[in-house]
Length: 402
Image 1 (cartoon, rainbow, N blue to C red):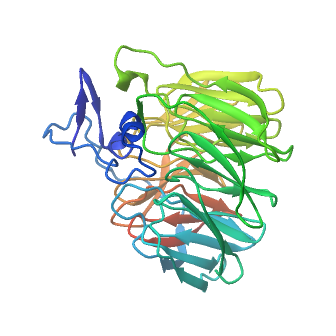
Image 2: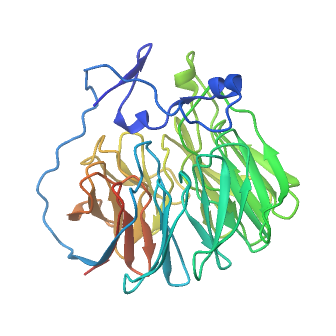
């Protein structure tokens, strides 16, 4: 493991994939982050070594229903290309442009398309289309039924998260701090919302969400959550999830990188070195909040909210309070994914490719299996009790629990 040290701060394996200098992006006038994705890490020290796994008492059986190979998976640039599920099909893409549609029950490949693009953003699906963002700053939209490219549209910079659609617009977030809406039919630009980026950000963005009320909500690297109208981009409200603190730029990183959680009339967001906050969708009024540091999304179940913090501790807190129900530190510094609640468990995967099942009741690890020897970075999908896990090498796997 290599460590970046700035002043008396250190960043473990968990953060190496993220840190970029956006000031350099502005100075160079780059439309993508090609060549800026990595900072050299030469230290031989390893102060935040991932813990070794210990034996567990298996209390749940994990069955592999099917497995499909999708290109080169996440590639070599620390992407997090999360699949999507819609209408009984799983849609996944690899960094080298392999896009597939898989029957979620049987695992049969319905179609496979080889794009001449480097995919960096997760896959979005809805309204009979599949959407993906590229390193070359394009949104590519395909037909769900056969994989035919319907249109592609250029945006201002690289896309690192899942585009979304409500049937009228396709919205995507770019790494230069913009939220863009494209016409669903032909990809023409409808509107753009822009924020100011801090000097340092984590590599990644959260995916915007489109609410049933017709608003688009997005979180940015400056720690701000914004709501605009999906139809025309008219501003509705903005609120801070975190406030930058500290003397050095690295101490002031407060990105909202985890996917937002839509829960009835609330939207929840988490930030690195900041807070977890819940806001009223209509007004932006703060409903609830607590201090926490996470660059992953949240999930909920059993009256709890679940999040993985920047030390890979999995934490359950009682919803609408700061009461910790349980905290599991057995996966410390193992770069675990965002939690996903399924049945009676919370599922996370780690940098060595292990899927862990944790009891929602008391936080014990009760099940484990290895998915991909190259590790897992993409978010886990849960669909009607089935887990969909996309490994770094390109292994797309469906699992059921018993």
